[in-house]
Image 1 (cartoon, rainbow, N blue to C red):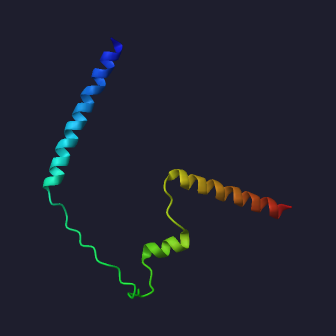
Image 2: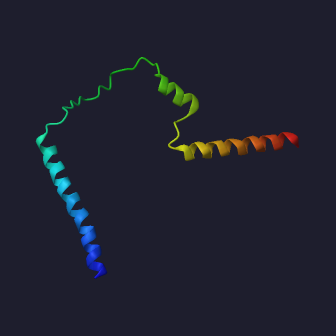
Image 3: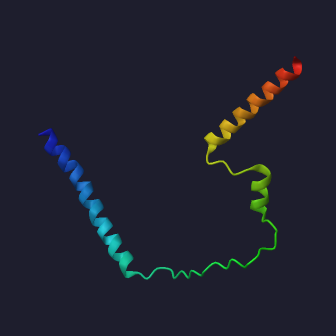
Length: 91
């Protein structure tokens, strides 16, 4: 009895999800979507040698962290390094 209730409970959202996906897929096929033009890269094209603001920041400060966990790990590593430097100077 419990298995049939569980199956029915899972079957209803599954059918709803399948139906919504079918509707979404049919709409996606009907719409033309954005027109994207790709062009071949020119190996002879040269840049002007300048960096944008984001590129300069990445070179000076390193890449952006992925998450707050990365920021916390970096802060802990910096604290550990600073403590090691202080203890080395006090010897």
